Image (cartoon, rainbow, N blue to C red; front, side, top):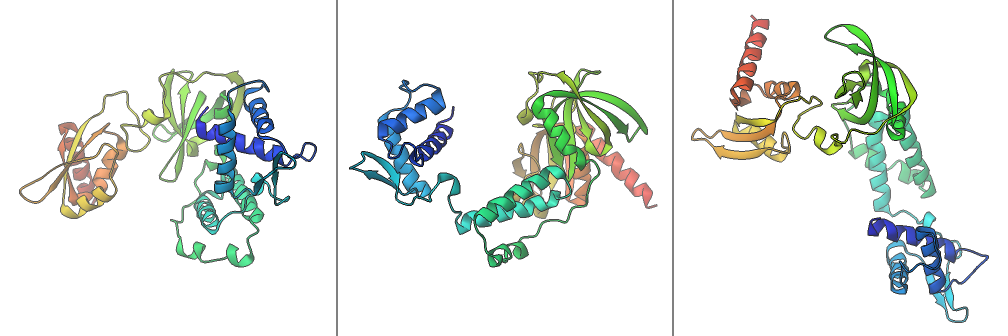
Length: 337
């Protein structure tokens, strides 16, 4: 168990022990034993030493403003403020601003029940902080503005899918294929939910094809959670699955080096916000053009991104990607002739 998480657990145990009216003024050893029993399941354990408890008491005083006092007469600890509880620590103005900013971000997803629950939880936290009406309506909301996003079909599936992922239960649903214009029934082991450009996607293993596939939530309907459990494929890693992709497309191919040339203005944008984590600046040409390289799969989303840059970018390699961009550009020109 991580040291920080262990420390937080001990703080809560110590807090409860000090507030225990049936056994007031716990000694340092009693606090140590309480932590041993709560965390390791035994009073006789020696996982926690007295110096650790001393450090915890100091940290609680300094980091959580705990009014911990030692009584020489009672030979134990107590709170000088009887109303204090570690679970009721007042939020600072900085804490409140951070929470309200997070609340504003969640407003983008207010149409979904899942994020609505988060919003409700945040509201409860702010209520417990005893915010006045002036604080609740201050200028934070007026100076932070996010893109107004339209409601996307399929967001209502987020909550049941998340529950199925956590429970590791196989799901069944109808799926609409935009290209083939047909519906089909899919049985899938749900692994991951991913958001990309205000659309949500389910990544899971198809029981029929025995491969990991991405499904758009806007094309899913009639979800049924089955009793069948599953074990996540050992080859799947949320951190690595999209490592070489821009967007939500993943091919059974090896990524390759992609090299582009841009003008100086687009180069500044790419330097301030890289197109992909693999982006590297290669060189500056004699004509003042900037050359960048990436290690990527040539996905549909990558092509659309490059086409969106228009004349400000030129693909140098690989040749296959360059040829595709040229053909797409020719088709675009035909549309206007």
